[in-house]
Length: 292
Image (cartoon, rainbow, N blue to C red; front, side):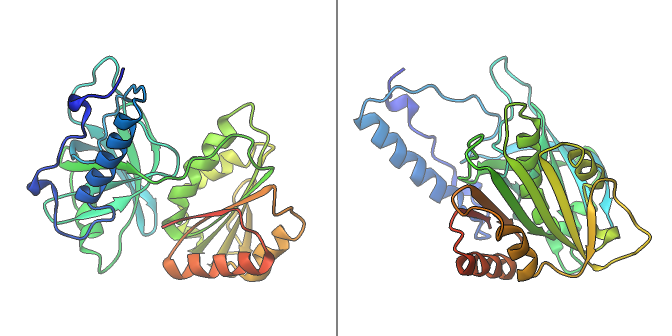
């Protein structure tokens, strides 16, 4: 179908903006959507909208259906869509994309680790001084949380790289795990994935069962670096090492790989992300993506 005025992205209400400086702001997203709409309209492109529960410029109401401990300082929260599903509607994200959560307190971005047609599963780290995360941790089953999105431009093309190195610390693994999962689940995918993740200790590792399961596949391997390693702890199929992720760790893997056929995905603190990209520049690896 061709574009017309009825296809124009709906303008958000002033009340849709929380004023907390969200990135992206709902009005910035709307301006970008309108600009793309104008460009497609002027070129008379054909368009078929995706029926996604989630919207970029409008919050949808979800409710908490499940909460459980993920590790020492993290919890899993499952959010289910409060409205009914139409026959051609479902929840859709690309692996690695994030959403914005809004409560009565404030709003914050989170990357779902998995999702179904009407729900998302979030990994939430409870920070001692984090008002928003602490408030999520004290919410109850059935309480409502507003969600908008999804955001993030990264899209992985199957078999586009021979090797994929994933580097993360802490809850940065939330952005990388669904990408790894999608690659391993694709029976036609021949890319090899190696995840190197850093945590304080074994007790701080989320997704333990999931990582062990992925490690049983031929094209996935995982190394976890622990600042405080417990020698008695084991993870089936996963290599546990002492220490932080160092330049030697990354260089040791990349020196035997081709910069042309290797993709590096990075997610951690701003300091971690900047440090890793500096190492990649020294090694002359230019195919990388940073999840902010």
